[in-house]
Amino acid sequence: MTMVSAILPSETAHRLLESIESALNEKNTYELVTIIDSATPVDLRTILRRFEQGKQIALWSALINHSPILAANLLDHLSDTDMISLVSALSQEDIVPLFERLSSADRRLLLGQLPHDKSIELKRLLPIAFETEERAALQYPTYSAGGISKSEVIKLHSDAVVADLAELLRKEDKYLERLEWRYVYLVRESGEFLGALKIRDVMMLPFGAMLRYHIDDSIPICSPELGLQELKAILDATLHSVVPVIDSDGFQIGVVGFKHLNEALYLQSEQQRLEQSGVFGGDESRTMPWVTRNLRRLAFLLPSVVLSYAAVSIIAAYEPLIEQIAVLAALLPLVANLSGAAGNQAVAVSIRELSTGDISSKDLLYVALKEVPIGALNGLAIGTVLGGLAWILGTSGHVALPMLIGLAYAISSTMAVLIGGTLPLLLKHCDLDPAMLSSPLLTTLTDAFAFFSVLYLAQLILL
Image (cartoon, rainbow, N blue to C red; front, side):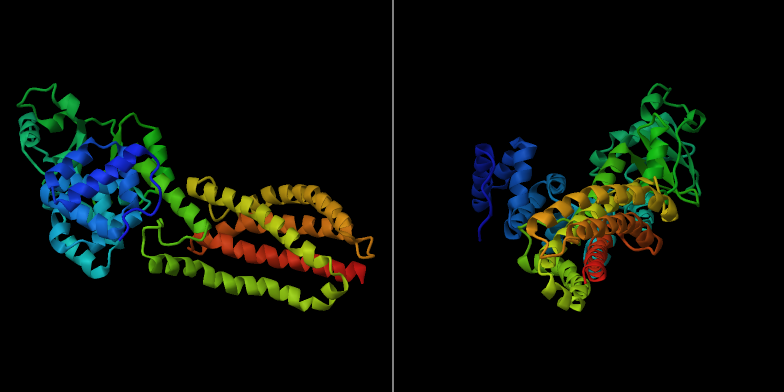
């Protein structure tokens, strides 16, 4: 089986690949760990992402037996889709030590995306120290404060003193590297959140000082239901690096900061970009099985066939007209494509403003009033150009054809930006994904309207 399907970008990456292959073939795990530890992140990411699954399984299985924390950290070099695929293929014996050392965010991702039977098994492996927090976080949407929160925090009982914290930090623990160590959080006997302190401030206190008397009241809290933009507003308004996430019962699920927020915003934008391009189910790489890639693409293409047929049926209805004025066949796709481009611009702006919270699904009239003038002005400008092109192609004896094409595009462009601007809001109002559905629906509607406007005006004016 071929390990790499494309040429590596540098000589150092090529040497790294050869070294890893050699260590794997010789089953020299110590040498393998040494090679990976000394590799640059860029080259390592390039190599790992181009491994086919068989080699990935062999590599991670070897690393898990020698250094589970290194194996867990290496998963950060893979896309979420590749990570899920790899973990799904690992044996249960390999998954157990790996799963325990993943970050809480990665554990939740796996629990949400793996097959149900494997997900149930993994839930039993949640670290006891953070099990309650992680189970609570699983209840919230992926792109919410609760969904992106970090569960590995330092919690102490309300009567704790500085010496208790020092003792906790001295302990050798396999989760220590994952802890949020800048703050310590106090909880009552009932488990209810009491307050937080900076560890830096705690270390300035005597060992016998009770922590609850030094709680920092300037540390804000946030609800796990908050969306990403609402969370950003809270983080923008505080100087603290992370804020505790507290549910309605007063239980602290974890903490969240700009690092977690920025990662979530990036992943959300990438997901929207892929869905707008017709790639569903997460990131896609060419090392994935071709059957999986085919099925995911067909999920977009097959419905598009139906939608495209609905638009093209308008042309069939005007077939006699096109036989008489053949140049229309050349102009129809031009008007439709340019109308679609104008509509996609409006879709992109609406989806971005929805994701940033600048507009909501209730702002239909506001969006429509902002888009229509732009569509009309650009429609007249581009329509004039199209009219000139129609005159160059030939009018087939119909001197009004250039004017007709320009007018049809102006109307079609105005409708395209109106539809493109408001369609994401309508989908959002119906609890449907605007990024996934806006593009195919917009294409169908703009094509249909463009075909109809050209052919109807041609029948009305030229015949």
